[in-house]
Image (cartoon, rainbow, N blue to C red; front, side, top):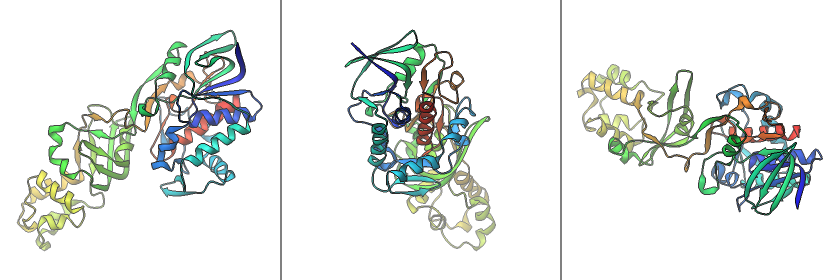
Length: 398
């Protein structure tokens, strides 16, 4: 025996629940399937447990894709204000933390309950946790063989995300389905991820682990280069913090990143021009602008005695020190990979999809949404906004 539905959505995360809720509330008979025992774990752990559910500034320019204009339609039709309206409708208190980033006051669980409630309002049926063993298309309907029986549906929506954070259930399911139906893929990569460095070369910076400061950071190829001003965090293995997570979306293996640790100060110029009037030791002077532990470790890494007075140091050495702080170039050896990545770059090639409905143009009835698609947002709520917008776009077309 098999059950028949108008719509089957595989993946009960942000995009999948949003799509199911919209389709269900339009009168479609919808089933939502997920293999994970805990519902929407990626929402639950996001934003430090408070879910950075959108960004008030979200627009297509905050997203990376091989087809950068693809996301414009969905994002324009379902805006941050639309989702904020839904949050208010459910009485969820929230606040803006930084640069348009909106977080729940209480817990990410509020967003999960919002989505579950919207699904219930649409009469969505759940199959959780259930493994999907096989998907096929027979005529105009899809056949989904699961661990709890067979389902058939006119429309199949793949919302199973990417490869990031496998310990909470991430898999390559979406990519396998794409390959099965001959849909092109953009090679996936870890995104919004800490960067690592060769252990031997990183030794001088290990004492700086735990230090955080605001920096300017830049990286990328000529056609796609990122530039951000955010907080940087030194770790035992490399660099993290919002600045590095942001730039990791633009960085590619073998390329350097450029850091300005004191963006408000041209260190070399100030030291040379004012050295005669600076009576302090270089260590004390630098500690005015940097965390003292960082200033000490930085001078040691650059072979500068922190006790020497600024006036006693040669101009050339002062300029070198300034360059090391304002124009620090270094090449990561890699990243922390999918286990620490917040998102996955790449995925289903958007040139195979309709930007209005997220439907595969060559396979009627098949849709891909959310992180499974080659659309990746910046850090700060942008990826959730893409989940909502792409889910709504698909849901309204079903």
